[in-house]
Length: 382
Image (cartoon, rainbow, N blue to C red; front, side, top):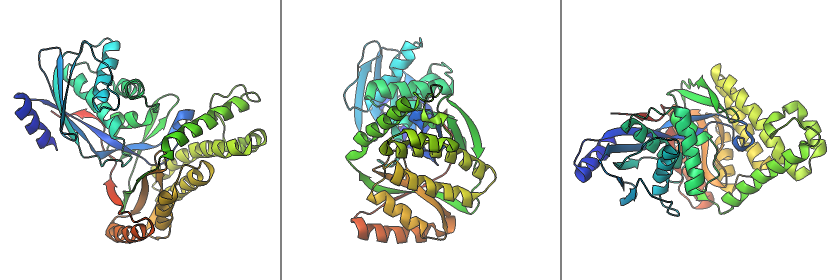
């Protein structure tokens, strides 16, 4: 991909580029906790997006997307979002930089990646963070990683209308090989946790579905959490989000909230706890314990938070039946996307054959398998 990006840039723009890379991400555990200022446990992966960039001594910015085989041109002095267009991610970052006082001039760019479409590896965050990294490197802005992550988050919110959290761009910016990031979404600070998997590997299984419920259900769950906080704050005025409750507070929370709100609050409170337990498990190489936490997370997301679906539940349950799989759970917002699995490396071919056969019989869909490994974050390559 690196060679292809460089070759394309030379052919289109006839000058030597600077290269940058930004990775996608996985989340080991900690779903639907970020918007309650909770804890998540992501890692950058080897799959990502490459960028070739160079100044062009004008106000015009010329972009070529290899993935879409499409060109886009805009004036850095005057531009606005184009509904549903990939160029919004680039214009959004330029807009954020300009608002922060950075003098962005015209540039040429070619980009393309190897993140599977619809895999839940967050290609949008990789695109935003990668563009920011490339521009910062090109113009010697030396923008700190945390600022890049925050600019990427704000860019998606304003230019794509996505009310996204900090996890995806943060993981893409701060990723470290063989480590996961135990990220506090209130303070936007993290702890690097080493991951030593030994004879085990991480494997994603893509359901190849995305149910229409996804967006509306996400908004409903978010509203349920906010409503719960509003009700609970009348009794506990010191709390700001569900993150401020611990497991021992659950009986009090249960006595106050209506049943349908309590199950959602319970998930967030216990999922935050599971993130910390998972960090301890991996820190001490307790992979069996980590696998148990993955299973508990899935069951909570499916039964309490109700964001799973038949396909995700099927894949998780099929994995739990296999002695060589330590853990499996849905990853991401839900209603489709991937499961993440921790399993013996040498049994991966057997796992793929078994799951492919059973999933195809159940849903008439061929699943996709994606091997992932915690990797380094966004960077200038050349």
